[in-house]
Image (cartoon, rainbow over all chains, first blue to last red; front, side, top):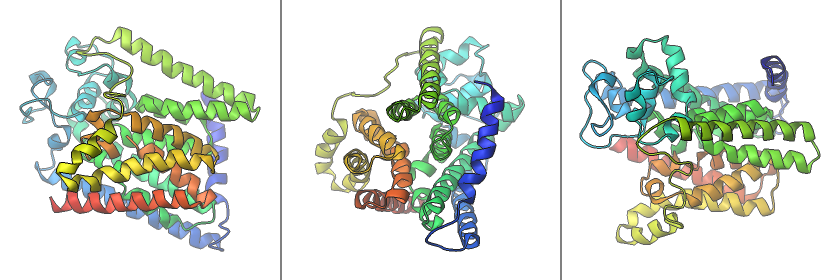
Length: 343
Length: 42
C-alpha cells in the first residue's frame, strides 16, 4: 500500500468526521466550541499531570523513566541520571531503545527485559526521530509524545460524540480515565497505541490500526475484528487491507522474536499467567477491601464490553468485546498493579 | 491494558446509546475520579 492513497483517504475522511452537524446540539458552531473546549481541558489535564511529574526531580523527567540497576548500564543513562535499585519500570526500556532504535550497540538489546519491548518500536522510534539524535532531549520527548497522544485520543472521542449528536464534553469521562494519563507518568507506550486505534477506528483507516499495533501489539485484536467484520459485510478490499496489515504485524513480531536477543523472548507476554488472574486477585483483595475500588471498575468494564456485544454489534463494539476478553486473560503482573490494569 | 476496550465502548455508546455502554462510561468516570484523587492526594 502506498503512502499517497492513504494520505488522500485521511485528508478526505478527516473533514467528514469533524464536520458532520450535530443532531442534538443543533448549531454546529456550539459543537465546535464544545469540541475545542473538551480537547483543551484534556490537554491541560495531561500537561498539568506531566508538569507535576517533572516537578519531583527538577524537571529532568528521569523519575518517569524509572531506570533500574538490574537492566540499566551507565552508558545508557544521562548525566545526573541514576538507576534505582532493582527492576525499575517499563518506561526505561523505551528510553533505552529511543537512544539506539536500530540496535547498533549490543548493550541495548541486552538491557531489555523481553523482546516485546522492541516489538513496540513506534513510541521510542518517534521519540528518537523528534530528538534528531540528541539523547538528552529524550526524557522530555517521551513525555511530550504521550501528552499529545492522550489529547488526540480525547479529541477522537469528542469527535465521535459530536458525530453522534452528543455533547463532545462527554469525552472528558475518557480524559480522566487512568488508562489515558497514568502511562504519561511512566513513559509507557499505551497513549500512542490508544490515539492511533481511536482515530483508526473513527476514520476507518487500516494503516492507523497497523501503526497502533507497532506501538503495542494488542491492537492486532482490533485489526482482526475489523478484518472479519469487513469480510462478513463482503467488503473484500477493506478486509484484505486489514488482513495484509495484520500479517505484517505478525511477521514483524516473529522477526523480532528471532532476531532480537533480549533476556527473555516470547509472544504472549503475561497472558494467562495464570488463567483467571483478575478473579484470583478479587479473592485476594478480601484481606484489603480497599483494593476492590481499583480492581472492580476495570474488571466490570471488560465484562460489560463483552456482554454488550450481544445487543450492540457496531464496529467499535466488536473490537471492544474481544479486547475485553484479552484484558480478562491478562496475568497477575497486570492485575496486581492498580495503575497497570488501566494502562 | 483495558483502555482500548473502554475507549471503543465509549465510541460505540455515543452511537448506540445503550445502558450497558452508559454503565461503562460511568465506570470510566468513577475510576478516573478515584485515580485522580489517589494520585493528587499522594
